[in-house]
Length: 178
Image 1 (tube, rainbow, N blue to C red):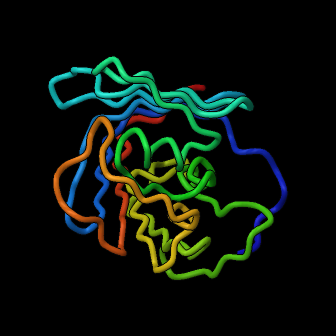
Image 2 (cartoon, rainbow, N blue to C red; image 1 turned 30 degrees about the vertical axis):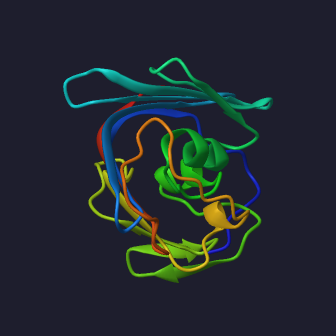
């Protein structure tokens, strides 16, 4: 599908995140609020805050629980530097709402699409058609790693070398009014 040029939809959700680079894994519960600005809260299964990320026109900020602070111009860069994760590009909010990103080519597949070097697949959907499970896998090369600065480290990193196939799974437990 070819997306129209429109702004990402406003939404809020509660869910779970699993990210992997092929050798390391990160999991957290997730609270994502998307509007004029983005707020992402990641917590452990027991509710301890791991990270609170704010993104707006001025960039992305992550004051880490360990006292360090990370900033970047884009969410994908901040996630890589601050959390040690390779995430899909800035189009993730569109993908989370079940649509491809505007202004970029995409290729349909039976349960999703491919765009920016990522294959996005949707599992089940709710009664309104919103995704309840999203799997995104990077095909080499993927956009989030295109600037080359694949650093280890950060708040949630684990030991191990990064491989060439990052993936992200989102399980959406509840869509909320924005």
